[in-house]
Length: 268
Ligand code: FES
Image (cartoon, rainbow, N blue to C red; front, side, top):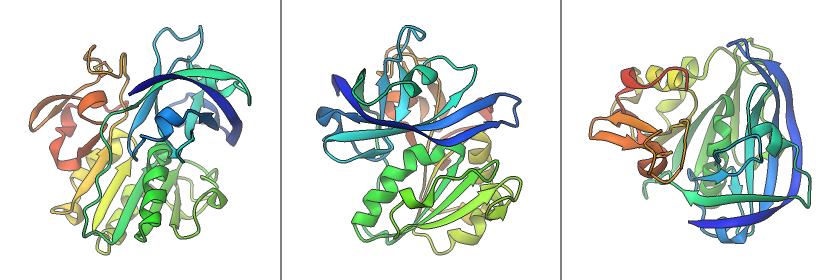
């Protein structure tokens, strides 16, 4: 884990704002690239960084590592209109400096015999799964990515490697299949050796009850509110079948079956 000052190499809004079904507004979805070889060289898919987001935010904020190429990492994040921290980060421009530390947490684990992966990204879940998808494609694995969003504003296909089979799903049916990712997961599980997911807790609860996933190796990444990111403040504690765990230190990646989902806050 390194504490560094990174320079911004690129920052742009990728998707426009929308009104979320919760009634809160997302003002946009942003991609920022940070030159920090000390972190980019160590980062593995599933890990995250803690970013100091200016004066408006006392505590650092966690962000999944979206991509890492040895020199530069990318972060992909929602900016909620009423949030603190992410609006500041979204306003950074090329050449600005950002202080952060990481990489933190564990990582997704590929079974050596796995050949076909199914990735399920709900909402901003692509932020964490993109790095895994890229790494799997580099190893010659087949990757199907189910990507679910509320509206037609989907992660741009041109940003993805052409080897990735993208299956868009939208809640209003304006693009791809109409519904939630969990409505379509069962169709794709048979041909997958391993399943990876990143999304809201409601999605994980639905997955935990799916007969099609019973006995399948399924890893999920939990997004929790964090204070320290280092296992010191207990803000991110979650109940598992193996006792209390801290998402920042023991996760964020867990086996789907290990978490006691009824005890996890649905608002996450
Ligand atoms: Fe402090 Fe996890 S964020 S223990």
